[in-house]
Length: 338
Picture 1 (tube, rainbow, N blue to C red):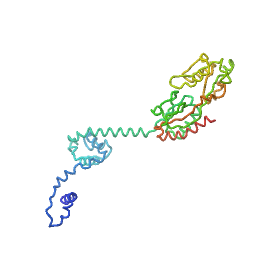
Picture 2: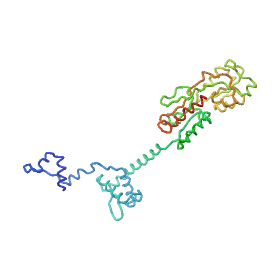
Picture 3: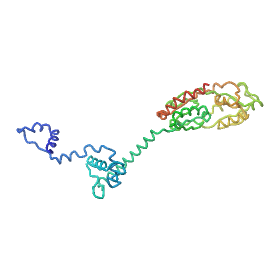
Picture 4: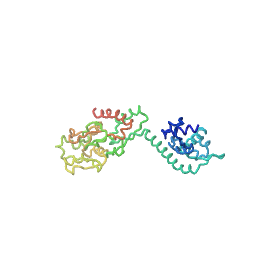
């Protein structure tokens, strides 16, 4: 039997000899020993089953195939068979079998650190895959007033049918960097062109005007146009990390001493307008339901700006973000058309 196997192996390497196998007139054929042939094919393909590394480490750590089988929750014959397969594929004896269990050979001891490195990589791979497939919160950044009750109602409506999707609302006047991962979605008034790599949906055109309160109007009256600003006092908003377009508009239309208060928070400026401290510029849509605000005159055209919904491309690759944008954008835009 072995001779036939050896012969067939030789016939592939020496095809000219094949013709002489049953021909007595041919010259004698030189045979290769079976032992030599077997050695030449050792570790030809390497081990094929990565899970055998896990079995190898379990037997090494537990000291026997029986203990390893309990740890791995498989049968003892399966563990023993996988060790035999690994030894055959590597061409190494990994364990000395004895009545006291499996003792690792020097070759096994050299392989253990490499096997543990593979194990660590597999665990890291698994953790990363879980993280990538798990649903992350959708992080939305906007000025606090954009998180109105009407906006939250739209989010709640989406959440009713997508209960596994969570949200984080990041209130900020400063424009967070979506490309750097500071947020997933931004509701933003863009006075400059946004990064072309961002996904962009236009929501509306934000419009601005000058407002006062009833208390102020009773004392000083209200200007009817930009030509009637003399004699009035104003409150303003300015800070270093946002464009100061409203403050600049005021300084171009009134004297410096007419600006009596300056704030770094819009909410504080609005409070000053309500209390009658002065007139101030505000978003028309933002204060339309606040009866304490009285508009002085028509919208100021040069202050109009696109109101955009911006989405980072990395976030948009997530199916829950795409689904939310498709649901949210038209409903949110409808708020500003009403």
